[in-house]
Length: 236
Image (cartoon, rainbow, N blue to C red; front, top):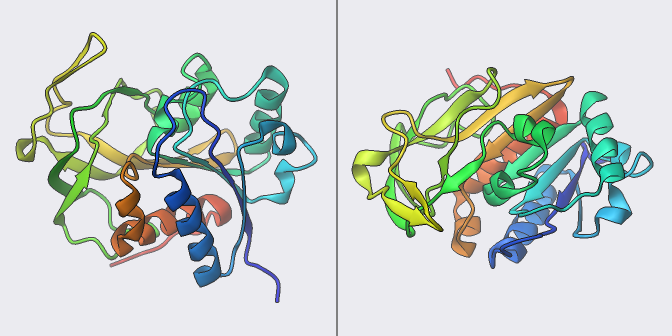
């Protein structure tokens, strides 16, 4: 039987390499088995970031990528892919990737600024009517490295999850960059239509154990499904 769609999992790092990446790759492979979609994983940009290989995938997942990971030719091919209707999924430190590339920064929507130590905090559902959001209660506990972001770089971001800053200590000093939180609306996951393609991001996924959490995995699948197919979901 034919697969529903195929995704590229790309986890190249030019900076910090998260120990959770192998767990993330394995989790996405299992999601593919569960939901009948193909998964191809690589950290070799030269192998896949071109006009021949990218069209084989309906979505590209940047799984905890960091730093500068694409050359100019690869960037141009990735832009063409998105503009031709491709899907993008950013997981966790995808927000700390290609921070000198304005187009990518707009595609992702917001970029990493700082984070405090890992803490348990309360997540709040901002939008239920999106794939993968239906298993979350309105408020629930989650343990994460809570990213603080810079300003929105796109006016079309639709927020799915926020973290309640009253439930953890958001203060930090990250290499001279001080974080004090983002206030009542501290986004953690969002999506947007972008230049003909689709972009979904979740800041969750720092800890290896997160990839054993069925709620998170359903959330991640929902983002992959939407990015790959463009199909929505109504929980109400």
